[in-house]
Image (cartoon, rainbow, N blue to C red; front, side):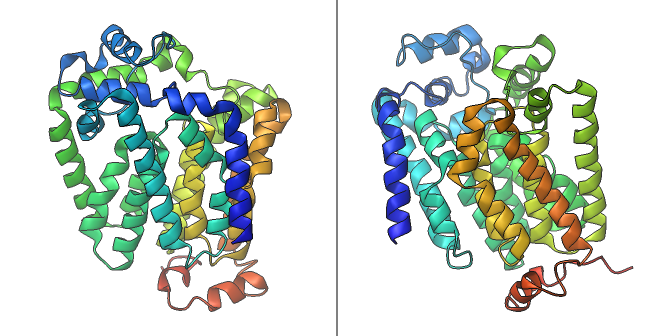
Amino acid sequence: MLEIILGVTFLCALEIPFRNTILLGHNDFSTFYAGAKLAHTPALYNHEIVRQTVRAGWPDSPEQEVYLRAPFYAVLLKPLAALPYHTALLIFTCLTMGSFLWFVIRFSRECRDLAILAAFSIPMFLNINGGADVPLLLPFLGAFVLLSRRGRDFAAGFILAFCAIKFHLFVFVPILLLSRKKWRMLLGASAGTAVLTLVGGISLIGPWLNVMFSPLITGMPVWKLCPAPNIHGLVTVLGLSPKIEFLLAGLVILFFVWLCLRVNNFELLLAVSLICGLLVSFHNFVYDDLLLMPVLVLVSPIWILRNLTGLALTPVVYLATFAGGLYSAILPLMLLAFLGAVWFVHNRRFIETGPVGQDIASSQGRAGFLNVGSAPA
């Protein structure tokens, strides 16, 4: 309990210089609020109209402010548009904090380090300060894990579809479901995606895709995330050729496909899919690393992976990232090291003897973690 109090105090102290950012709502929530007001209208992806709507609550907002989320997300936030801006911001912040707390409380029973690391969570601090929505993914991921453990695959897949809020971080999950032949999950995810598409409006899908992917061609400033905690940021910091970035991304993809064909442990593969998504995604900020918390839960019985993930969640790593320069390479290197550790786990170098073997042996109530080796022929 003392550690948790110290962690919360630490984050509150960090927040003091940025308190006006939250109070005034000068953050990402402004675009979500604008999207909620423009939901189900062709103006949702009209840059100028979105900017005018944003400036109603934030007069000096940057010119590059645009609505980047899928159409259904604007519809889900539509009730907030009926409220004054600052009231809506307060409710949205409560929703993100509530989502975060639910996940921590629900899964801290099986991952004893989760509560302490949550209390010191720099990614959560950034989500609150920046009005970001990554914490909203945690209940969907948590529900997906719980439902899949109970064998309710269709419902699990349906819930998983809501992670399309930030779909680019989950691009490896369909590969996982296909490789493990999780047909009911795929059916549920397809049904959920279809429902969300209908809710958002089919006619808005084209404009959304154009807004999402045209910056990759035009070089829009919002996509220049250097240094970022991913392969792109790593290559940029080290001054390497863009060819190295494509090579590393290709190796990550090949490694994940190979792992899916060789490993039976579904939850371990889900954790690896999240790590790979964070590494390969070009549009990835530090606050997206809040997804390392579900990774910590999923790998908690495996000693080496649990400790490596826990270390990546400590404030020291993120303070080093903010220091810039070569220090910002630490986090993506740790994520790559996680993949290397998974390879060692797969080869049973740390499973049959030593602390990891003891951890797995002591968690016999969770059959999903017992089969970490190769898939049967």
